[in-house]
View 1: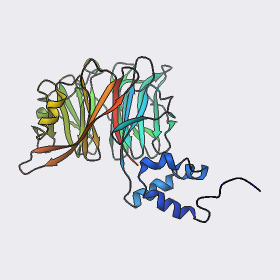
View 2 (view 1 turned 180 degrees about the vertical axis):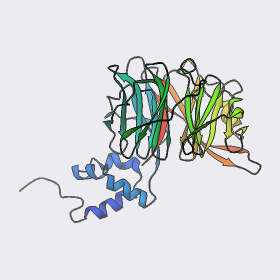
View 3 (view 1 turned 45 degrees about the horizontal axis):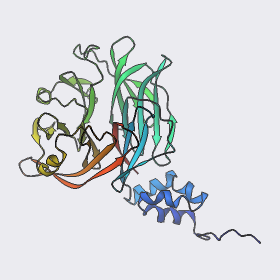
View 4 (view 1 turned 120 degrees about the vertical axis):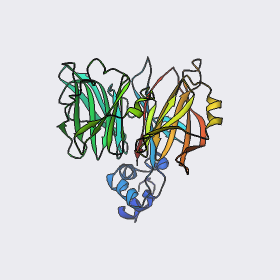
Length: 348
């Protein structure tokens, strides 16, 4: 005789179990993985996430990367208005640029042994790290953007020139990018404050006080003087539905730019939230499945606390963008002061 408990699913085929699990909110998967080794393998299987997609049960999940003076980069996931540390990912390499494609987060940057630059990905289904082929050219100060499953990475190479390379997430191969032969995108202009966003199938690069627009399908560069009229290169910008949002620290408002209409505006309806925040010590934005997430620290005296607000966006008649605060809550109080690096949304 054995004392092992009977199986909870003695006669259910895997296909039926997957069909049931696919309808369960993903926040319960860590608990379900404790049921058995078999369940643990099912909740991280590609088949389960394919089934979730077919049943339209997939969810947008927000991940946040932070670091501090006494610890390495740490990854968190936003769950029920709180950031939960993913302890299984304790060896995240130091990188400079981060993007998400599908269920993965891609990380690039930091030259390795002066030969090549690091590239890796995090599988958010299993929370495991995978090394990818290194960037073929040693790059630093990298920025990255995604279009049609390809990741465009721009950085400064050892020759002090600015270079673009392209990573295909399907083939895991690097491709030579377009030449950055615009003299305005020079090594002197390229610094740690440079940034990149993708809107309406165009890549927007901002360095110093100028914006440069690359159209991959046409292989040409453009300029957008209206976009240049605001200082959106402050690192707190994001794109939601091909529209740019950034927090204007000087004016204390959330600005919005429509690249099709080529016009700036201010998001309405956030007066209460902005009054509650005051002049935040720091603020970052992130796209969250068609919504906007604002992360912020209220004061310099509380460097170990982070708040988050989830905002529903609505475009009204006349083109005005209105925001409705769905919730605002403190999401973490760390053991030591930390530095917010990036937040990305992943579909799971």
